[in-house]
Image (cartoon, rainbow, N blue to C red):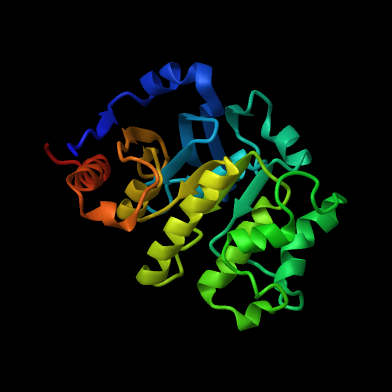
Length: 275
C-alpha cells in the first residue's frame, strides 16, 4: 500500500470543498476569556468542517484551545464570534434534543451507582425511556465489552473499564455527535491502544460523527480520517491532514508505510521541517 497522506496548506480551501457535506461546521469562530489584564484569545478564526459519520481529530500544543473547541460545539461555552452548526442548526438546539454525547478524560461516574445505573443516568435525567432510539443500556454495555459487569460499582473496575462505561453513557440517548476530550489520556499505552480499537468498533457500529482531542500523534493518525492541526495560542487551524488508511483500522497498520507517512505529515504540521 503506497502512502497517500495529503496535507492541505489552506484549511479554508478544505472547508469550502466540504461545504455541501458538512455536518459539523465552525466558521470564523473565536473565543476570548476575560482576565484581570483584559482578555485572552483562546481560539481565533476557526474554520472546520466534518461530514456526517466522519471521524476527526484535533491535535496541537497544550493550551491551544482544543478542549475549548469541544465545549463550544457542546454548547457548554458560547463563542465570542463566528458561527457553529450541527446539521445546519446551532449547538443549543442539538444539546436540548440530547444529540451531543461528551466523553471527558475523567469518566466522572457516580461511585454509588452500578455500571448499568450509570449508563441509564442520561435517560433518567432527560425523562426518556430505555429503547427510545438505537441500543438499550444493556445492549450498550455489551457493545463496550462489559457484559457481566452491569452490577459492578466503579471502584471495582479498571481505568479502561470505567472509560467504557463513560462511552456507553454518552451513547445511551443515541446522539448524532460524540465529542471525546482525551478519553484515554490517563491510561497506560497498552490499554490505550486496545481502547482505541474498541472505540473505532463502537463508532463504526453506531454511525455517530466523532471528534477527538488528543496529544498523541500516533493516536490521531490511527483514529481519524481528518486531523485538524492547531497552532499555539491563540489557536488557529494551521493545517488539515487527511489520513488515507483503509477501514477498519487495526494496530497492525501502525507498522505500515502509509501509517508512517501520516505520522510524519502530522509531525511536520506540528513542528515544521522539510519533506
